[in-house]
Every structure is written in C-alpha cells, then in structure tokens.
Length: 223
Image (tube, rainbow, N blue to C red; front, side):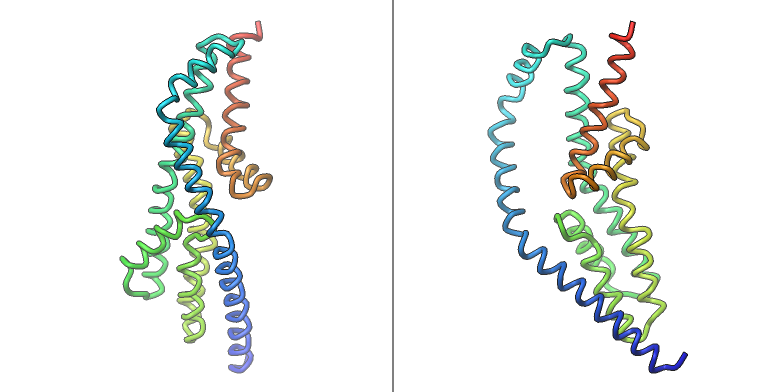
C-alpha cells in the first residue's frame, strides 16, 4: 500500500466524517427551537400539575374498576419509572463522559476535565450526544496522521460510549422498578425502533404495564 493511497483514504474518510458532523449540526440547529418549546411546555405542565397530583391520583382510584391495591401497584411503578428515568439521564451522562475521557486519554488528548464536562453536557442535550465532542477530535487526529489515536477514539465511541446508554439505563430502571433488566432493555430497544427518541420513555412504560398486568392476573384473577 502506497503512502498516496493511505492519504487518499484518510482524506475521503475525513470528508465523510465532516459531512456527518455537518449534517448533525444542521439537524441540531433545526430542531433546537422545537426542543426549547417542548421543554417550556413540560416545565409549565409540571408546575401546574404537581400541586394537584394527589387529587388526580384519588380521582384515578375512584374511576378505576380494579381494587385500590391493584391501582396502587400500577401508579407506584409508573412513578418509580419516571423518577428513575430522570435520575438515569444524569448518571448515564456522567458515565459516558468518564468513559469517553478514558479513550481520549489513551489517544493522548489533553484538557480532559474540560472535554469531560463538554461530553457530560452534550450527553444530556437531546439530539447531540458525546459523539459531537469525540468525533471531531478523532477526525483531527486522523488528519494529522495519528491513525492509532483517531481509530482508538472512534472505536471507543462506537463500541463502548454509545452502548452505555441502553445497558446502564435498563439496569437503573430495573433497580427502581423491580422489573428484570433484560425486559427493560428489550422495551428500550423496541421503543427506540418504533417511536424514535421518545421510545426511551414509551418503551419502558409499555413493558412495565404489560409485566404488571401479567403479575396481577397471575396473583389475583387466574383462579
């Protein structure tokens, strides 16, 4: 393999990565307004809903044809799920930032504290993710001829950092909701396939409602 062919490959690879990053930036820019609007609506709904949650719960208990103990099981698990989802966002962001920083360290990148904070923040922001920090660095290393360093960051981002989300989220939700992590992992993956990003919420909710219904039927109604 000649040096010119290697340089040509790196140039084409770098061009493809640049197009990917540019398309991601455009996508983020076009959806940022929608994200802000949805966030404002969510905050307003939360502000007006929290004071009446107890009354709303009592209303659901009165309207449901099931026993109150059964309704309480559904409500408690859904509340635990939502609380765990909010908590998991920050825990997963921290884990992805630390693992991403590890591969940056292996590649010989400095300013790890600053980059870790950037990865933590980008992991929290919808439609962004840690790749928005690591991939440009990998591209820069490849352009400078550091193939090993660039490939290390890309490998770490694709194989480890990107997969922390689903696995760790399923483990955290399982701990808080008493549902097996394998079932929650299937719910997350299936939800992402069907609903997109909102599947992170819809998938676990559907799984929890389904499993809870099976448990209630087996314990109370089967006989």
